[in-house]
Length: 204
Image (cartoon, rainbow, N blue to C red; front, side):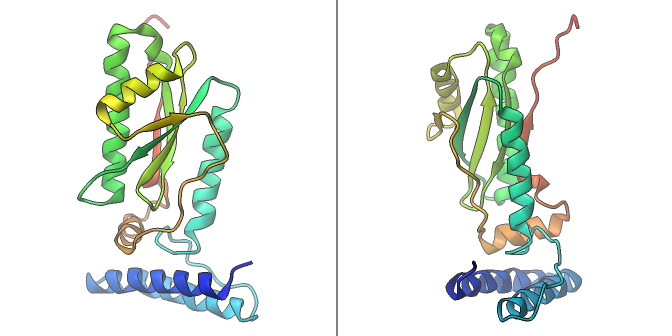
């Protein structure tokens, strides 16, 4: 059940995104977000099920999107030797740009390590960044010790934490500028996703 305080926080966050979209002339998107917020508020007051905007920039519509993606990522990791890495997402250009850099960095790290240690060729990553600018990344690393994974990650991301997989999820609340950027891309929450598949066997 959403409390009045939670509803007020979500509405305030939505208003910041609406203002940001209007300031750069994206009036259609701003209107959709405002209509969604108004409908949510009306439903909270007992006026029935709302019409939704289905935008990743929306404080409400983003939640089920992220929940579905994260559930799929967790299902992907089941049945293999997996660890959970928590890695800060750092970029002056915003959350989405930081995720893009992290995705590329993880691929580079795996490929570079695999040149010397062939068991790393099968290491792969799947995860998602949250509104706190931290990425939760599930790592499949059959044949590679968790401590080795941690040491490799910390050479590039000193603040990275690697531990056993637990019931955690990316933070869905988001700063207004990150939510506005996500809405502008019109790709749902896909820009927050991190997927690095294992290397292909050249002889396969």
